[in-house]
Length: 95
Image (tube, rainbow, N blue to C red; front, side, top):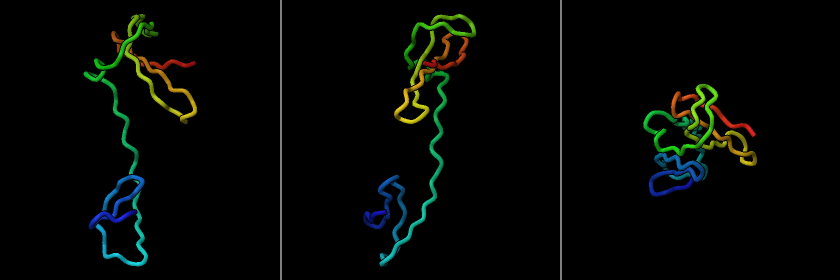
């Protein structure tokens, strides 16, 4: 935590709190909040995604929206997700 005016600011996460009087030893305990929820891709958001020619396993349609998502460690490849433009089924591509 560093002092910025009358506030203490965490260098790592940016959490701010009102600073008390400076003393030789300042102990601050901040609970970590859960990470933000991943937004669900649906409705109008789908229209902004790119499409590709791929066969839907549910209805046989040949067009789907696609996006990439990092699910594991950074040294592993991303996973490509597809969502059928006709029936809405979502599936992932495995290598």
